[in-house]
Length: 135
Image 1 (cartoon, rainbow, N blue to C red):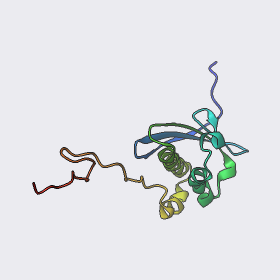
Image 2: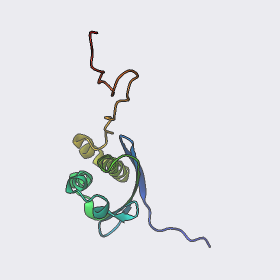
Image 3: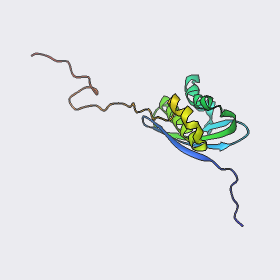
Image 4: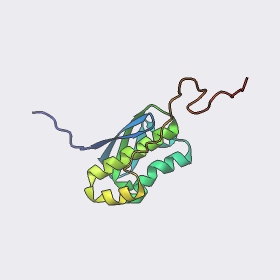
């Protein structure tokens, strides 16, 4: 007789700049969040970055219902926080389709398309040109 897992999770992927976050939300009695096998507060020590992620739960009033597990790679911590928030929003939408309206109005379901512009040949940076000299 094969053993069957009783905990069912909902997975989603969130992205921002060069970061990608795989998010799994599992229904639970107490809220908990781990990011890359570390505690949420330890991985994101800055309060503003934690607020970016928890604002998704605040918009839906579902924070106390889930255990969240995240694997995030690439980018910096700010980019990773945005990716986690995007992934959590997509997972919550998969959990309950009625939440789509609330999440969409707040802009959580849209991937932030801003990223670094590439450096062009002959320029110092993406748009900065060398000092022009007449002679």
